[in-house]
Image 1 (cartoon, chains in turn cyan, red):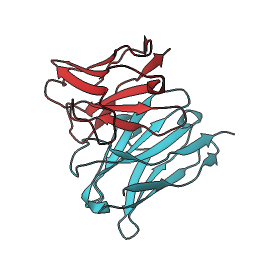
Image 2 (cartoon, each protein chain N blue to C red):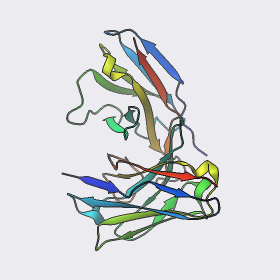
Image 3 (tube, chains in turn blue, cyan):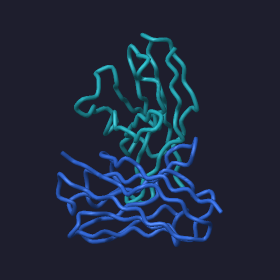
Image 4 (cartoon, chains in turn brown, red):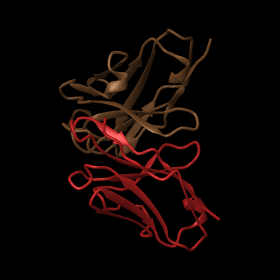
Length: 121
Length: 109
């Protein structure tokens, strides 16, 4: 069955960077795009961006362009999401979510368990 | 940027029908998807492509879309359906971008 297992919780200082991993199994990693979604404490879901694991092409929400980088390692069937220049309002649970298509941000279907990133001085 | 609008809260008694709406200008042309999220858990897809139900989702969950509004309906809502519900669709200007509605807190009591 499809499984997305994310890396563990992180605590970072303002200005630092964080890289969250999403290791997949149970399907062909390069056949479906991967979304990243975050949720600040007590807030709603926020779509951050998407990577095509086959080509490496990415698409980011305007808010995150220039500060978020999504990459993948096809040999490890793992997607990564890095946020740089962290601020306190980046404190959130970050989710990866597998789509059912490859070329469009169609439908985050299967989700990882989430990774809590806390930004605090 | 494209937005999807949901009511912040909906409240029903057990056994009643709950309806949660999601409005967006592109919904006549783009599918809506619905997610359920319970506290401390990852979201779960409950409706895809406006009205289809994934396997394992109870039949009391249904979806529809008309014009610029999509609706999630829970017939005979149960206490365990109390959760946050989010709609999702593709950005009108770029099919490689997604957008979530602000979420609706469903209270069943």
